[in-house]
Length: 285
Image (cartoon, rainbow, N blue to C red; front, side, top):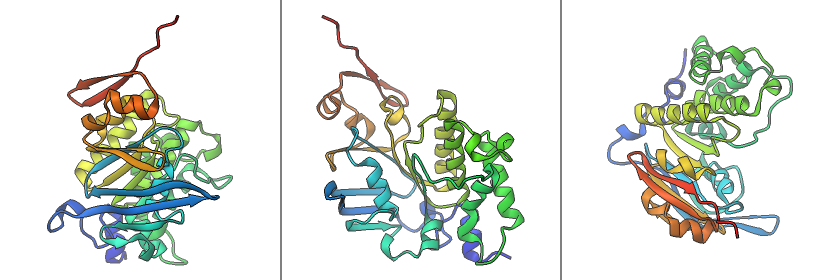
């Protein structure tokens, strides 16, 4: 029989068993204050402030080397930092490892993959925070994995070795493991990496549907500005390890800001789904 905490995690609830958007008042999912990260003597983040409300989708953009992936790792407690990071009101440093895994799931661009592991077994690792020490996964855990694999068009790969899949297929497997984890906060580092446009849309639509229906909060980084503004409620532009702009997608994805911080010539087209960034080729001659 599952404990109350295990049942909460299985159904995508927070560690207290409450869906964030149904809590009393408006809960803050992520609160970052004066976050600083130094790696190998280099300052990667220099005093970042960031707030994500429960149920929001916030996307971080910025040029290469801006510190986007490091910011996600720091929010998840995966790199040493100074300043403060709180998840649903609890400092991330105070969350025990299993409690943290029930609260936040992270999909990085190149996670470590155990050699010789089948897809199903790898995704099943996402249920580890809910399995008692020396215990085994329940039938419900196994069923949850099957459901997520089907949602991501991965069911036919269940018995395949992860190392035999294409880059895009592996990316969907990494997302499957995170989703089956049942956490309330999902950190996505470049979720469209290696995906063709069809599967990219399927993955982003699935995540957005889970956010709308299940109380999931999403903090993502995106390299592809052409779609970055279509899913985010708010955006944060990071440059040189600092926040240089934040707000609604239409306020951040402007031709002026992108020219300044990306040194790019673009045209921003406003659609019913948000601003779309279109690169403009420089005229030869």
